[in-house]
Image (tube, rainbow, N blue to C red; front, side, top):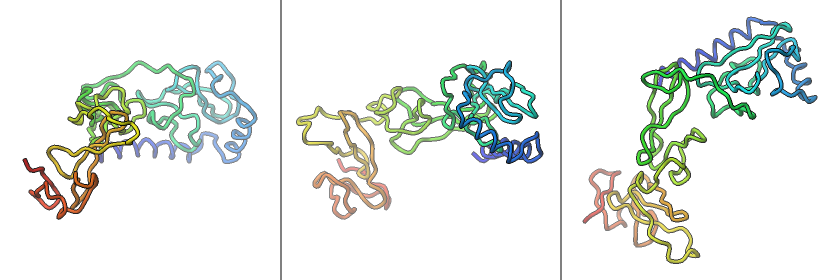
Length: 253
């Protein structure tokens, strides 16, 4: 994790140093660029064959999300982001324009450069799910081709569409029932609303069924799920459980 932060920080720092060093960029140029774009300039229309709309600036290049046009003193040149990073046309002129997919709106630019996979990663940079539809809680953060494994919070699955941890029933590639080890009983009366069900092993945990799909919750430190009241309660009132450790309840029987 530390190494990942160092690498990403180094990329950002390099960009900041470049901007501070010059390249023809001034605050007046940035102000003029913003005014020009506000007047209706079509960023998506820029290609390497176009003249620069401003003497200094960065603009999307064609239909490729990881390529951009950089203009320095009116001279255009095409730049390619590192494999797996996308060009953010909304990034500040003083920041590094190549960012992770969750931070970028490609604005219809669907093409990407060919991947440069490693033994760890399908691309040099990016977030990728680990495991199959029954093991959805881990993902890989790739930095310079090195993969760093992360766990979603308990009960959540990695969503490949949003690049975030989400309820497993909201993730198309995750089998929520197999992942959580629980299948919701058939609804007797939809008007009764959402129902809660105890975890058969750990009294601190319970399931909430939403539209017939399970979600796992945890009552938290010192509490357990009481079937009597259908809610979390203090340890002393959860008579169906015993405590192996002060914060870990196991269900009797």
